[in-house]
Amino acid sequence: MPALSEDQARTLANEFLQSAAAISDFRSREFATLTPEGVLALKSLELKLSNQSDDMTATAIQDTLDNLDQTVKRITKTTTAARAAIATLQDIGKAVTIGASLIALGTAIAAGNPGGILTAIQNTNDAIAG
Image 1 (cartoon, helix red, strand yellow):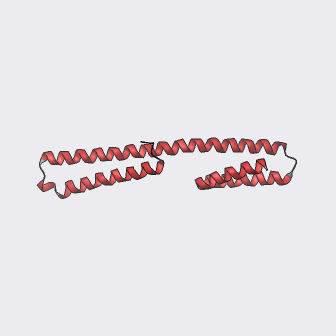
Image 2 (cartoon, one colour):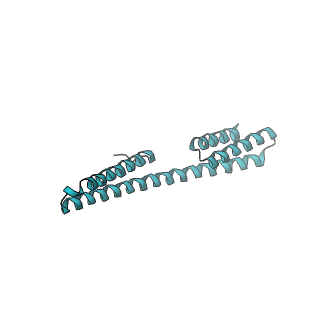
Image 3 (tube, helix red, strand yellow):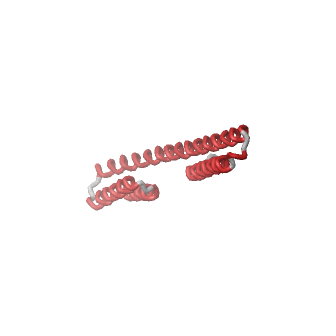
């Protein structure tokens, strides 16, 4: 099976957590009719489902960190290229365009807007090349 995406891992984590809650609700609701072994079996299932939820959450967090690392590398590469381009420019218009693109990139980063970050990286690279 291919690796789960961040969103898929979060969805599954939520499903396992809700399943653990359903087992807990059942155990509480039917407690009076359950044997001690039944109570222990249900509690064990609840804990295992909760642990699986935690594992899926950890997978989602790792995916987020992996994607963040790749994005930071792209941002660093782009800002380094922008500084190098500005250092050699003779055209104020191009310098302003690159600078404005960098501001848009910073704004997208501050807003936590992944799509905006990717667009701003591309726009900055286009401004450098243009």
